[in-house]
Length: 108
Image 1 (spheres, rainbow, N blue to C red):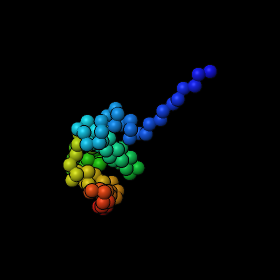
Image 2 (cartoon, helix red, strand yellow):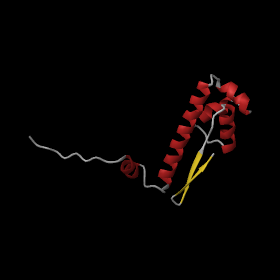
Image 3 (cartoon, helix red, strand yellow):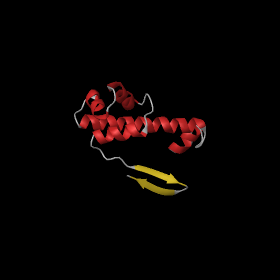
Image 4 (cartoon, rainbow, N blue to C red):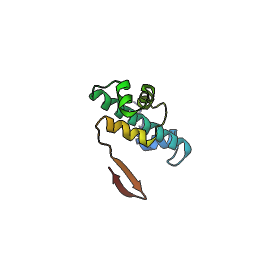
């Protein structure tokens, strides 16, 4: 019986190989889209837990239902102001973590 050697790769290695190294335009775009998708899912989950429709949340925030739909499905990027208004309307705390030159800064 012939034995073959399996090689394992970390997720970071796979992203470097197939998407691009950190700092390249392709990788930056991938990371941005991933973050927007996660944010959209967080908004949708919080809205559903509050038993609000997209229209009701839009009214609380002062935007159209279509804007909430786009936020949740990551179709467009939103301003930080709109995102903060959405989470405030959902009565949800939001915290930002920022790392500058290996120094972790947490903003609430």
